[in-house]
Image 1 (cartoon, rainbow, N blue to C red):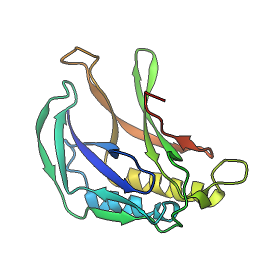
Image 2 (image 1 turned 90 degrees about the horizontal axis):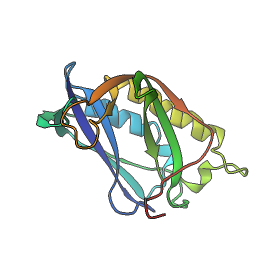
Image 3 (image 1 turned 45 degrees about the vertical axis):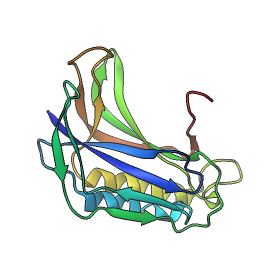
Length: 188
């Protein structure tokens, strides 16, 4: 199956280096809809500091999910930049996380994907360290809008060293927990 890879770039605030959300869509059904993806990020901009921008591209890579081989390019319209609207105060590397559940199982484990929305503005955290109810509401609105943006999927790459064995499963349920997600590097 052909899948379209959409790399959404984050910049500003406490975002260090190259920060991105990598999304996959079933390209056999059609090209991704950058305008609908931008609508999803617009749904969550009230949680983002006003010095953070998120850029949705109008083109990206087409890959064969079995091998991971680059096979072409997709194009669309309606992408662009979304800028946060909350106060610039923020905690570096923390925000919200959406878990994308699928019906796939590999090696006895459920195939799931994740999208991190980091950083969130400091105003989006409760005194107990969880997300405020409004932040959870906006994050759920983001997840719902992403589900409506096209045939969203989770790609399981071929095993290391293998040239085949990759597979993509459609997302059946987004899950947002009322807890803070944080990003770390392998060096932390």
